[in-house]
Image (cartoon, rainbow, N blue to C red; front, side, top):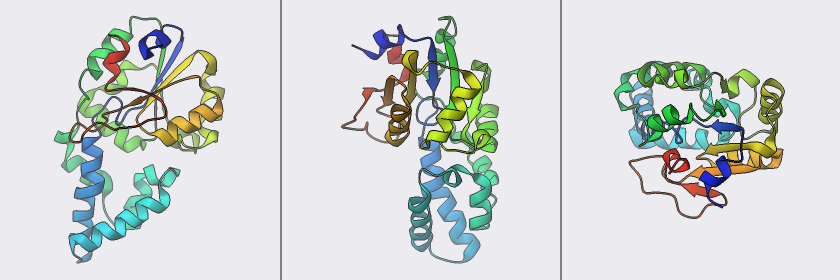
Length: 219
């Protein structure tokens, strides 16, 4: 059964933002290059030392809500994180076919929700650039619920807020740990994006149905 066929069985479609609709190349550049470079300049260390320190912090927090919290990183690194994001806003962009997909899916009668781990400040910046929020009646961020999507509490809070049926819901995301969490909660139809970052090669093996972009759901 293809992801497209499965979508026809659903009444709710949950879509991730970064790496599903928007190109993850921007976020990877920010966290792996631009922010470590700014940290090196701010604290008088080499870029290599900065990357080593930051990457270690990233690994320790990955999957937790603080990992996605700009306030946490601004305080921890003594940097204006949202300001640094704004410096590189021209890098923000849609994944191929994603915007056309949202325009098309709006006529399908599905309950389409944006569910993201993104901090509200980052979401606001990306919406300024792309207008992504206009395609959704509701946008839910992990920070509104106090849990990341990797945590069961997120799914419980989302279900209480939206009342969706996990059996007739499709969730599309590029992060397997997030999809694992949704699966444990009971979401039945799970799809992963194989090329969330257009500057990198597609991902290989995946435990979930894989598509190169959301436009494939309508092919």
